[in-house]
Image 1 (spheres, helix red, strand yellow):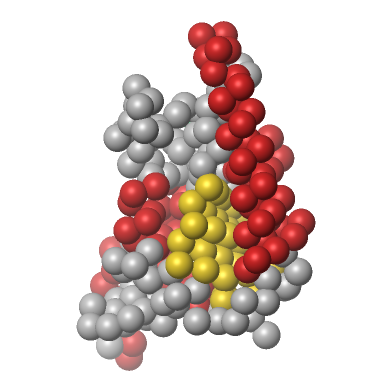
Image 2 (cartoon, rainbow, N blue to C red):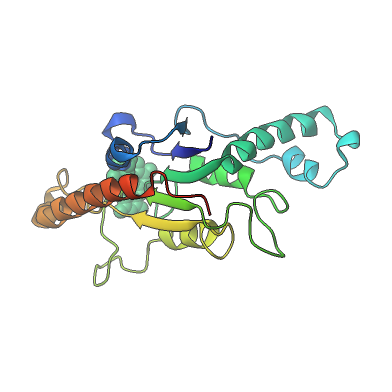
Length: 213
Ligand SMILES: Cc1cc2nc3c(=O)[nH]c(=O)nc-3n(C[C@H](O)[C@H](O)[C@H](O)COP(=O)(O)O)c2cc1C
């Protein structure tokens, strides 16, 4: 039986807004879950041994290459075995936390999870990305256009590469309760939180039991 692969990447534990919104999704999700918390168990950075192992005959692998490949294989098998995905990827310095990038570098492998000549083996599976951010990046915001996280993940996870059916939830202005200068934006933050939890609950319920693509 397949499962929801839930990957957490916020360093903040229980205080993470992304994780709290993910909880709303999980409260409605009825199927089995495999949970990987990258803040607790980070995937190692991709090493030279890991890169070269991908294009070297296994019979010729050095011990370092064999070890690096075993790490990739475990993460890739876990990724391929899921029929739905839930990623919490908060904004750090305008992009994704380095632990999530390290995980992506381990699992994005041509011939395994993606193909340059056709659909990937995970194409069409649903993926929900929850990305809390301290500021606001929507249309008309002073920082509009500076979000280098959502467009990147839409491209990598979505139609262009992995082919997942991606939905993004962005709880915004999470710094408003703590930064006096942002106090006038509190109502916008609160509205964003309500909308994010509602959407997470809706998706958790709607995606449960959806037949695999
Ligand atoms: C290292 C770090 C870098 C951050 N960089 C940004 C940033 O570039 N833009 C922004 O809007 N918020 C930034 N923030 C604020 C976080 O996006 C915000 O606290 C968000 O709620 C984090 O998600 P989480 O609550 O799920 O951990 C940063 C926070 C940290 C810890």
